[in-house]
Length: 387
Image 1 (tube, rainbow, N blue to C red):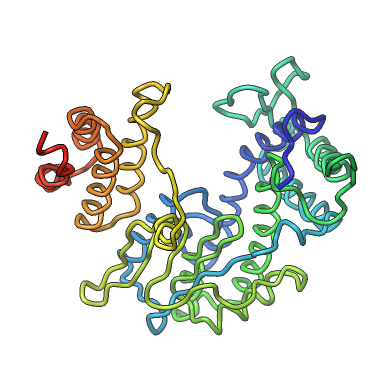
Image 2: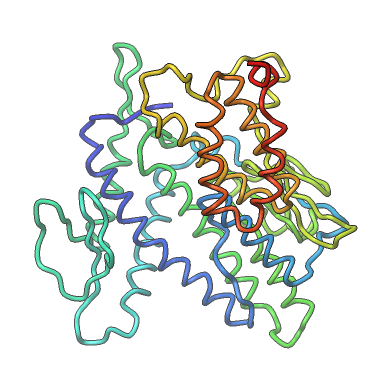
């Protein structure tokens, strides 16, 4: 992995990242408008940032009583995406994306002028799109489509990497260490996906209920950079769609996982036939590595020089994570008990650990407090009980 710490590209990469982050809500609305033409309410594109958006998809599918095709969902992975990206193609696709977003943002503006982006070197603006803007300031840059493309082309034309004493220029693929690389790879795939679904929807009869239902199922897919999840469409049909969607040099290939239950991001997702609901629970890749004999230090030592809030704040962040990923109380409780036991075995004070658990349960657990309070009485390590 090539890093870009304190290089001549760091500043432009940072501003590019901020600009793209401000542009993504506009492209998300473009995606929704495409699906709305056939009466399908798409809550967002395939592009997701975290597990919360996957949980939202599960809730939507439960509300619609949607079931997987023959109990077979699939996950896919662009395993060599970063190293295979063609830079000239990336420039063309990014130019298409930038022009599309600025054109949509200025739709209906008329003779009043043009909306432009403003990005700050530090912090973020509440409303980055402005109709009337002054020139650049020390902390604020005005972003036009032309300027955005200048940044993109300059960055991709100057990807120099030092290997020992040798300096080489990367002409194929982008370094994962550059701060805006995930944005560019993500949006390149987004453009391919938007063009493909637009073509499919344009050929769909809005009066044909079954076809509209297929379009709705297509809207439930998600992609976290290079990991793709298809919960509802058959494997054969989905692979035909993606074959036309992505270029040959960026082929998706066979599913990485398929079946009634799959591991996606840090979640195990399955269709519960008995309850007729989609379920999810925590999936920790590190546990598999531990079972294979690899030693992993997951949490800070109690005697480290970190502050108490830093060391024990991990408890709160992990419980937030479990609360999102676990749809059932018993799965949340199981993950919370393991976390509690890990901290006690690490040597943390029981009362201090319980304080952070109780604080989370009072503020965030949403009805799960009682069951977990009962469980906490039984998870204290034996050596602590006998003290």
